[in-house]
Length: 449
Image: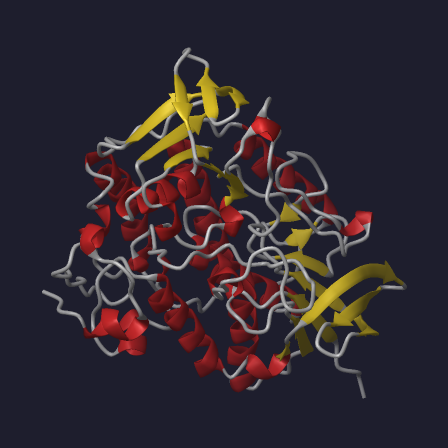
């Protein structure tokens, strides 16, 4: 009898939940699947969507993974992340508005996982300490945090799905050591109410900076100053939010900028991104998306130098859950030999082709075209993937950008149509700017029109 192959998955966030669901679908259709063991360092599934009040370390002394904050709402319409194999109406039993609080999004992701019966594959409170590849096998050393013991397991395949938004990048700035107020990274931001009446400096100009700025404004901060290095975000900000170019230095509670202006501050929040951090992998197995060089990932998943190693969720910004799901189907089909890999020469050329395309990304429109091409590339390789209107999702990226440009405070009040069912979402009577704390129950019980 041929022994059953063993598959290790590191992380139980949305990307690996999609992978385990893909295997379960194959199993329910009569296929033999590998023995799956998923190691999750947190006490529950959901990855970043698994909210915790904790910062720093957890109850076992391990670093906290989550970057979620209490009153977060989706900054994409939920139609952009709707699963084509598990619709919003199937989960909620009715149409809901296009932008939802954190708890609603988490409930949707977990509802799909529960339907798939995949929790049995996951071992919680397990941190992978090291991975080595010897004799065509992956040997994992794992820390059982709850029982405080170490153990070793051996696998035929490895999928790294541990995410890339958990280890903060915090640059140095002249004089910051003299700042008397609070300094934190967005990774440790949990709520905006604590900053009511304060002057806030936000370093960075990405999506976290944008959202934390309007969160602080919404919950009563005295002022918010967003500091950009290259290009401003460029929205029509409400009174109380401004953008300035480049932080030159800090002296006490006064920040000085390149244009000669200054701003007093009570709090500094770094929204400066995250590091690709895989300390558990030996160097020959590590991938770093920030370095535009080989070894790369074939079709964004298969490690160039070892075709039994896969990464999921490392290459997307604009279509996150969609790309996670597509990558999951692709990885499943490769592991189950339903999708044979081409020659190494072809793989190398394909990786170089995509690296060359990525090196030319200078504008938001370039990023959109790049990720759109990538989605279409994966769709061509997958047979039987549940149908959806991808052209509509591409339009939504442009529509969303325009809604933000018009009014950053009202873009979450807009309505979109499902690319799966064609259902138009209702609007909510309470506008986002007036909505405060929202539980799953209170949101679903509120009035929609």
